[in-house]
Length: 576
Image 1 (tube, rainbow, N blue to C red):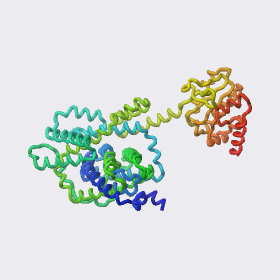
Image 2: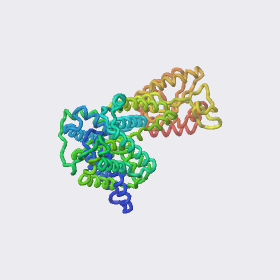
Image 3: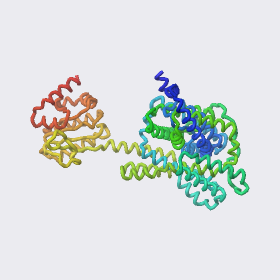
Image 4: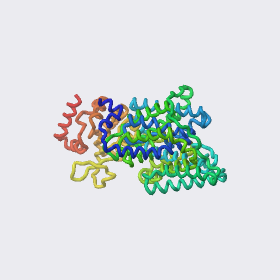
């Protein structure tokens, strides 16, 4: 039963469902649905799909996630970023809005879901660790700008080019903005103002529903005064029929780059908002691999009911939590309202101005441009700041796919750089104590010419063994001929590979020829085992291993240390 609860998390909370949760879950589900329905219609337009497909994507995926997701408050469905990525990838393969385009977008959901599901099954959730926070922030901020600029087409009523490269968008907007439709622009700008006003007044107010309602009433009853305003028009009624997407292997190969981008972006969106909500309560924990399985199943089963790729929504998840949503019941309530909309309410949206939808999207996505994080990183960590900037501008100028590839690549390069050049320092003795501390931070420590206590703050492996050797050589060179003892403080070394062991043995031999003794202090058990297996004991004895740097120096000077003998015996027994 424990395994079933782990694989299907709804069984872990539904049997213990408390009655007092129901009212909050219903309120949260209704509130999310009020935001989700207009957003779903709007995001379908971003994806280049008929509006109804946004509602289809708001139906099955969130129910499936409520069953299999480890977070009880994350809201799944169509999102702006994924919608733009879909449009970017699928538009190169088919005419936007055509039957072929729609079928490819649905097939893409199946491909994305399958990859996410397999990653979850094979426990590959750790891959997200290769995308650092600066990369995520830079990428998200850039995509938000791209999405917002792409919506100027509907906001101003001008047929601007659609692109994921900001310089192309800005050039076209600059050249054609004089052709804006006055009526469309007035409605759109006023809608933006209303949304911003209500967001600042109280985020719980359903600002999207308010502007949608006002827009529909305005065009339906006063449309003759607002000529030229584009409206949504017919949205078919009825639930999506079950059908399996047509499997086309050559087409799947072409979709793979955009699918992998959606996999990573969708997972990042879900895990980041999930972790944020997790920190605000103590009733559940988000499981990365389970999130991949839940997302995968949401997209796979969603594709069988005409949904395009879905992920978690930052705004709707926050609204769900703020409205008191406690469990996946709120998602089920939200899905029920989507069903009622599909069955009975789609004719209401006939007169909805597209500029209203553009206003909803623009205000929502521009809030994702995180200037504060850039300012913080500028003060806190220059390297991370420039990583954010590089990801931001590469996404803006080269497009979404290249942006995330460059961001991941730069993250890996930075990781390699940091691990290959870790912090190293000489330690000195704190006066009247048994402690050794960093001489660069503690100016009062005592430094002896005949002793070098060397600390290396990283694992010792092939990528940094040369750096270890060079820094050690540099420090011993400064000591000159007076140097008689080297103590490697290994407390910060948590792993060593064969290259590191071989380099260490070579250094021990080198300094032995110079009649310089080499001791090791604070070596962790697994690291010590690796050193012993690698042949270190062929060069030095167990007596050269110490619990603390102070013990090593004291033993070298006096040759008498009872604790060291006990420690050496302990190591010998453990090694045997």
